Length: 115
Image: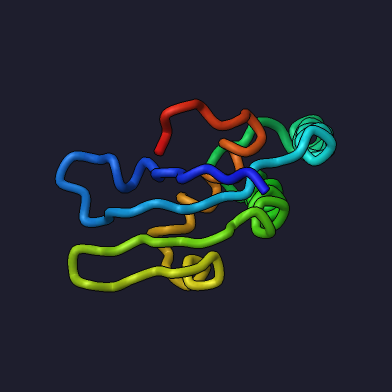
C-alpha cells in the first residue's frame, strides 16, 4: 500500500491555528480512472465545483469517494483539539473544506513534495 502525508492548506496558512497532516492511501491506476470518470460525470451534470448549493451534492459525493483512502489523521488546533480520523473531521465545520480539498487533490493527483 502506497501512502502520502498530505498537509492541508489550512495548516500552511500564515498564523494558522491548525497543524499536522493526513496520511492517505494513494489511488491505484484503476481506482484513479474510476474516480476521474465519476468526477467528470458529476462536472457534466452539476458544473464545476464551486461553493454553492448546486454543487454541494457533488462535493459530498467526492468526499464520500475519498473517505476510504484516509489511513490516519493527525491534525491539531492551537487550543489543543486533536483530530485523529476522517470521522472526527466530519464533526468540525472548519475542516469540511479540508475534506473537499483532499477529494479534489485525489482527482487531480498528488503533487510530489506536498508532505
